[in-house]
Structures are given as C-alpha cells and as structure tokens.
Length: 264
Image (cartoon, rainbow, N blue to C red; front, side, top):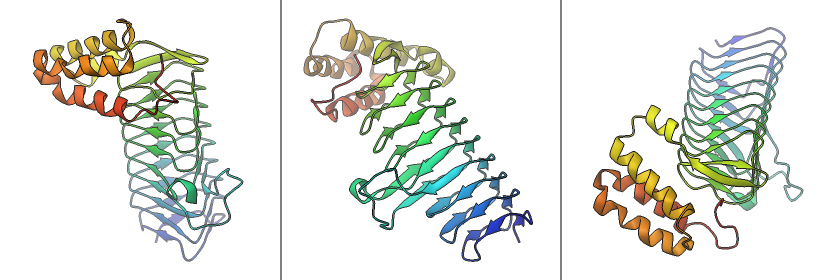
C-alpha cells in the first residue's frame, strides 16, 4: 500500500504505486496514475487525466491536472503527462491539454521547477530544464531541453524556446527564442549565447566556436533570417564536430513562422 496520510483523500480508482507517499490534506482524483518513488506534499490537488512518472518530488500546495484556462474547453477528455525525476516546488499550476492543441500537456524528465510556475494547456516541456520562481508559459508553448527561465519570465502562447537557451529575470517573449541564445528585456532582446551553460555541459572548443559563429551570423552581420540560415549551414565545413548543433539551429529557424519571427 502507498503511504497515504490519514487526512489525504485519494479516490479508490486512482493508481498509485506502493512506494508513493502522499502528504496531509492532499486530494487525488480517480483518473490519476502515479509511478514508483514519487512523493506528494501536503495540500496538493492532483486531478483530471494526469499521469506522473517515477521519483518525482512534488512539494506542498500544487495544482496539477486542472482544466485549461480556455473558454472554449467543454469537458473534453484531455491529459497531463509528467515524466520522471522532476522537482516541482510550491504553488505550481500545470493544466491538462485542450482539444484545439492536441489534448495533451507534456513535461519530460529531470526538470527543476521552482515556486509559482504556471505551465498552461498543450505545452510541451523537454528534459533538464530550469524554471525559476514565477516563470509562466502560456498555451501551446514548446520548451526544448536544457532551457533556463529566469524568475518572472513570461512566454506568449505558441512561442518556441530552443534548446540550451536562457532568459534573464522578468523577460517577456513574444517571438521564438533560438537554441543557445540568452535574452533579456520587455520585450526580450538577444544579448549573447549561453556559453557558460554550454561549458558546464561539456561542449568542446570547436562546438563553442560554431555557436559563437552562429550568434554573429544571426545578430551581428545585418543579414536576413534566410541569409543567416544559408551562412550557418556552411559552418559544418569548418566545424564538422558541431554538425548536430548547426542542424539543430537550422531546423529550429526553418520552423519559425514569418509572422512571429525570432527574438532579435
């Protein structure tokens, strides 16, 4: 049997692994599945079609799996998926998906999510991200791996955040943030590349040099986005070790809608 505090209310239809711990006054609904080793703090509400993986640490006062903040939502069967080994601090709100966005909100593995973070309907969050306190992403936002959000960052709906990028505190994003880019401002502007983060992740000198060149081509060469992509594609000739990094950048830029553009 899971270790459930006597004041918690867990619906008999919920599926909790025997190693799950549930704190005082927490409420868990009938369509919730929670994997091995996950701990749930006090005063949480976990509802809806919510699946939570293994070894997550969910602190007190979280709301997970509530219906989307979308006036069009009409009780359709939508879902929230949370992966493994995530830390979710106090007062976070993660909503299920909506029919207009595929019906699923998905959070990956090994994410560090601090207090008062909001992840809206139909968002897709990758792995190894950090959300500092009070960061919030609107509906349909896609966050790739290793992204770091500074405190009070706000992301507009449908925006994409590229892998290894970083936002400063109180940044406001209306446009896509390419991989590796550090931004700051309201609205956000590109400031540099996340070189310190890349060093910590073991990027070689050659890969770092390619990232530096991509920054120059995107932001320092007075080129159009199309021209920048052409020049970036040629970096694989001089920096073969960074071929995957170059392709990741090109793939991201090619998917950016012209009406939204990238953070400049």
